[in-house]
Image (cartoon, rainbow, N blue to C red; front, side):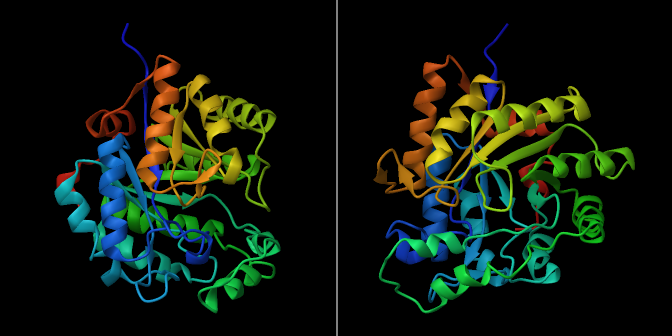
Length: 309
């Protein structure tokens, strides 16, 4: 029996952190492409991508910005490209879907419910802001809801899933999100193998500690049996401890500057540094890293030749 393969996802930039928090956060299409390609070369088989306005680094849903880096990444690497349908809580659903519907990627993220997605505690750390929008965006999360109603999720599954052959990284920020996913499974709107990302440590969702990770897995096992793969995303300083536990529990892992700006006690100088760090941990656990081809097989993806970029 061969060693179990672990999928490393790298979330390259996201929309949580802002340029003033780290000089290494990729902002321009060139930086995002360069960072994504280096992460793939370091061992990430899935690249989870957001776009930013190249002028000031704010999150953008503009498909034209995505198209400045998607083809370049595809040309340079075989990694699976996974585009957000979350974007930012300040975007409408149609804005959030514009780039995925144009690109028709192999994978997209899909948050499994509306939630308070609170980033405003990051204002507690004093810092010099480069851009006026940064503290404003963080403060806005005090009084906004990240909207993903059942109708929203049905629309994404229909338009992107059925319409484009895209499969999903189902992001579950709490136990109730697992039951929402089971509801869609029971209606035949999603089918295995499901790829479920347990998201721990966002204020408004479940906390980042080992007990909660074990609980999420226990409920997912009860609901989905052997028809799912799980991965773990832990915010901030909990990133490496909890994804290491996840790997030991039979799961997959997600790293990247979207989730944590650090590599150990230092600011991560690149996404690839975090990929290399978790690779070392996986090696120490006698686990092998899945190649992009193996990840496609594990998740039943349509293939990189069937995207629109």
